[in-house]
Amino acid sequence: MYRVLYRKWRPQTFADVVGQEHITSTLAHEVESGKVSHAYLFTGSRGTGKTTCAKILAKAANCLNPVDGNPCNECAVCKGLDDGSILDVVEIDAASNNSVENIRDLRDEVNYTPVHTKYRVYIIDEVHMLSIGAFNALLKTLEEPPAHVKFILATTEVHKLPATILSRCQRFDFHRITPENITSRLMYVAAEENIKVDEDAALLIARIADGAMRDALSILDRCSGISDHVTSDVVSNAAGLAGKDYLFEFADNISQNNPSEVLSLISKLHGDSCDMERLCSELINHFRNIMIIKTVRNPQQLIVCTDIDLELYKKQAEKTTLFKILYYITTLEECATLLKNSTNKRTQMEMCAVKLCIPDISGDISAIMARVERLESALKDGKVTVSAPVEKQEAPAVREKPEVKAESEPEERPAPPPPPPTPAQQTVVSADEDVLFTGWGEVLEKLNVTDKPLLGILGVSSAYIRGEFLLIKCDNPIFSQFIRQDNHAKAIKIAVYEVTGKKYRLGIYKSEEGNTKTNDPLADLVNKINNL
Image (cartoon, rainbow, N blue to C red; front, side, top):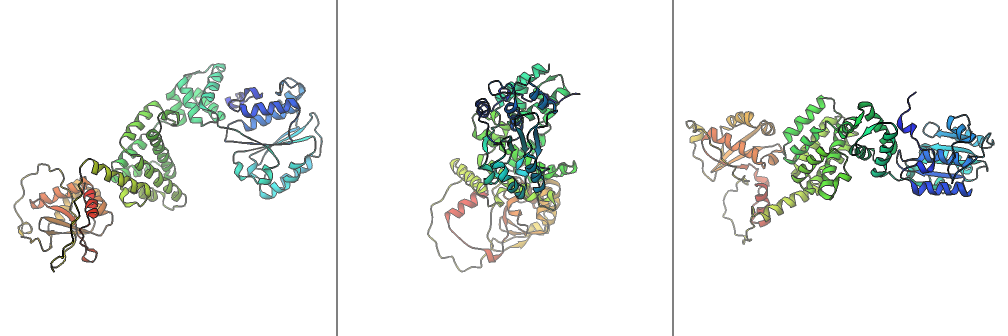
């Protein structure tokens, strides 16, 4: 029967264990000197050799002819433990044997002496899964077991263990195996199995495995089933790294402040049965890779991707700033938390997308820093000037008017000759009065063709003419963000020109309750920045 690679090539001696020399040398010396402790605790991430070292230690402690602290793998005891004919080494899965009754049964068993070996060894895997009652039942036995009993506890979440358990064990922390060590081991296994593997493919497998040798061998096993020649492309397809073009499309539209395209992409992925939590997680990892590129000199060592994707990441990193990336990651992390308890995950993800595309609506510190950076850049480039403060003068007693928020003039495009003037266009408007613009419905009809997202934001709205200004009255709070974007402001101006034949400056119609006059130069500066 075919055996998968990670089982077939499981280390049989301490010398075979890769990347854990600080542990294997100590264990081998303890066995060689006869100072084997009564209780060990092996901690570390998955696939780093905890259970493997526990089995080797159990064999070495009972081996009839140990060699430099390693089991000989030739004596009757070693062979009996390997083929399962000797039952004095017991492996217990704490995830399925976590009750007090299970530990009480174990406590009764330890009183029996081993049949074929010197020590009865209990290997308790994932020990953090034991209940509090089970831990308490194990304490006394773990502290003072019979002379013929050894305990080896293994866990990936050592922080969940009670301090009373930690104090009774000799603890060893297993590190993640470096990509170089994993690559070297993979090339050796591939040569022994007659699998042709490119070195860059082996290195990509090592980075994908994230420090776990078992995962690396499993990926190599999968790749060898796809092709006799394992290349980086084969690894990319086998590990699911390919087919992530939509993430780059997401990032491009977010950096261009284009919510309509992002929402359309979410709708398409939702129709293809893409899970929103997974999408959010993938976006977090995507922007994390861009963050690494912006901050690290050799990012390929910290990013798991193909060389082609690495170049795409670098191009996207050039188009954005670090403050924006931090804002994107923070917002997506908040969304990931909310998605777990959300009743409508698609809507939650769409809300997050709008926040990413329109950072001005967020009060997050990263978003504020991004705005400050934009302000500094505008000041440096000379696009904005700060006027000297002027003394406040008493305004004449005249009727107050709504505040006008003028938009910057967009680049004009050639327009067809204006249509014959209508009664609405012939109206002469004074600069001191607001007149309802009767042609606003025709403007909305043209926006239905040229800018549908903006039309959806406007909804029920109206417009007023005051001198050279066209003031738009809209109750939708997002409208003020849309009108600041040049493409939307330009669409409105072109539509108004085609209807009226006149060029108007845009503004937002505000009620008199919120109207305040100010000569504060800082406020003027903020208004200019918003109109860039």
